[in-house]
Length: 378
Image 1: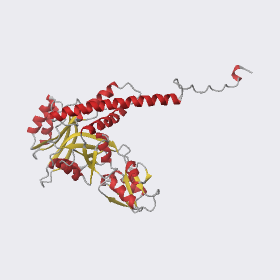
Image 2: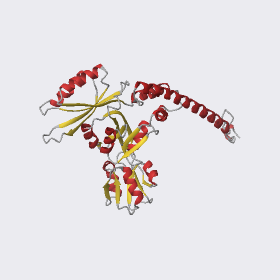
Image 3: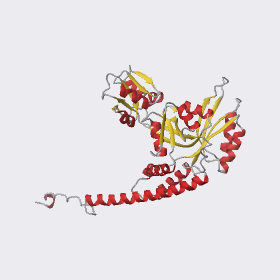
């Protein structure tokens, strides 16, 4: 037998963990959890002290720019192995729980339970909020305007279907302004009380969701009615009450209403995202201060003359201000006039942004700052 013919030896069993096995590691994790709980309560007591100072000064509890700076600072010093993308949702929940000790944060959004708008609200504010689901975007805006809610969460843009026109139109007619934004990967699922495709008489969903799933519906359910409803969660609620109906909504909505996911991820664009604006009334909440990575949203119009739109954009180029969004909406005046919705990078407290906006205002027949707010650049 040559050396090459020697029988292979069995592999050594995997080495046991260095700290005495699984049970020992679990005991260490339990000890760390208790340390974390003690530290979280210490943080909560400090937050209560901060709340007393804010109450004495008359300042607001929620400062989005401060929370953005806290999260950015933690990401920059994160040593791992915890991923930096996990830092933000963990600390938003911590800050949400501490904020709730000072005062409840009332947040209005397009309901009922299980909508993407609710998911966006929880992702931005954390789960320690008072939830105010509304039947329409108009009701969300009304709740934030009247004071029934401290903040409203409204969809403004989808990567497949474009802008949410109703939200943009309401920005013109309400005093609300934007203090934050968040976006979600929108995964649309066909939901039903019974786990099969046959026998569906109608698919109920928000018009945007029906449009986002047009190709799938045309291929798999070509003869089935597409029934627009006020929200995807409302479609899920209807499907839960009638086995001949199906809804298009999130898995979370399916769990909320006890439905089967008959077909997952049926949206036409696998990278489908929706962007949401966080709005509030300026009398109840000040505009966020500069955080270092901010967006300023505007709505403007210009007189209908040759070169007017070009002249409107010149101040941005002159002062080196980048434009990240440009949308138009008809002014409904019957004169072929338009409002332009513009997002620019930066904060009006920055000299070059302030100078650009001042000159831009002078070039416009109508000019309104919709809000300045921190954005997540990571």
